[in-house]
Length: 107
Length: 118
Image (tube, rainbow over all chains, first blue to last red):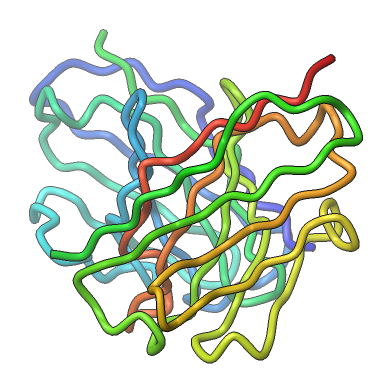
């Protein structure tokens, strides 16, 4: 099973700042990596798929990069609604696995 | 509008059984693979099970294999998760999720909470 390790566990930033979240895979997942956002009491929402493609309706301030084992989710200028937990997921190998999450909190 | 609505969660004793449902609308149900994903309180997301569009193939995480059964009724646009031999570690919110054209979960239900306790 592929293990996804996200860092940092918690990221404290202010609105307007740039956020950079990392996801590292225990073995190559090619570009089969996605990012989801989850707010308290809500289901996750797909942000980025196949490492760098924005899902429908996702603002351009969200971007993804990487391939193989190292991936990054960037949020160019944080809006108040962006403070949430972010998960990466791979589907290159069965079973699909998730990272443990990065909590993006307001500083 | 695509909607997935789970139901059936509740309190069950260890060793007991429960059946979750996920009612779908707004899309051609039989054309999509569906997954169950769970989330223990305050924890991360965990893949549980897959069922393909025609219902003929299913897959399960090792943690639930032999205890859980996923099925679907394409005439009723409904997905099911039959859970048996429940353990304390099965306590979680259970989500159904659609695998979209991209291959990823493009729609999720709101989740239903399963509590396993005596």
